[in-house]
Image (cartoon, rainbow, N blue to C red; front, top):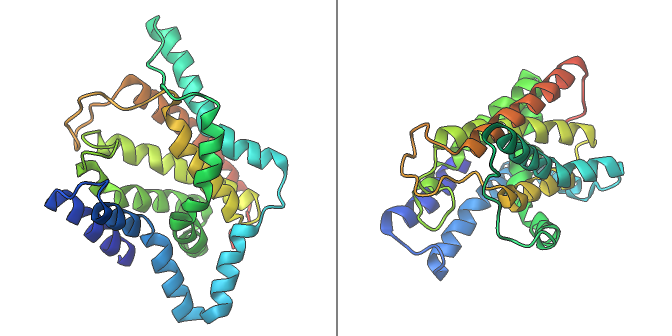
Length: 257
């Protein structure tokens, strides 16, 4: 509730007042809102556990000694999903979907640069909320519940013209993000609670998703179901993978703390 209150207050102020997102005030409010999950998590941890709890939470960011395959998964998961969607699009329609205009070699650099900034969300979502939800509901259910919370938290973004979600289907976004939450919980558990790896995956999602864009050009139906074929293919592929991750998390007790 606190995370929603901080983020929504900042983002709704930008949307309702028409503050340009690239102005100093707009950028400052958006940055504060984007970092709300971790700011709130750190405050709650400090209040309940003091400096020792803060140290333990932040230490997970430096948990980098994991197998190389998990780094490969974090960086390659969303590109693999997107390229598979492109191949299915080609096979079913006879035409390739629209591809992003960014040079491919810039994407790894963008992922590396962006990864530290994902701490603004991941300290809160996977660092603070996921272990507590998993202790109560189990990791599989917690990953879905957190995904819904995480996805709905983004709602104000859909009303800011400069943001790429403006006018897109919020329903499709929620379904996609919930499936991503399952993958991130699975990775977090497999890497012994490494926040660094989920931050890397989060960064890869943000910076590699538009190699095959899902955005429907000219969309104006935020609460409708109208979305591009690529978006629906992405939903299907993410949930096929999520089904495997959920089955794995149910069969085994994986580390989440």
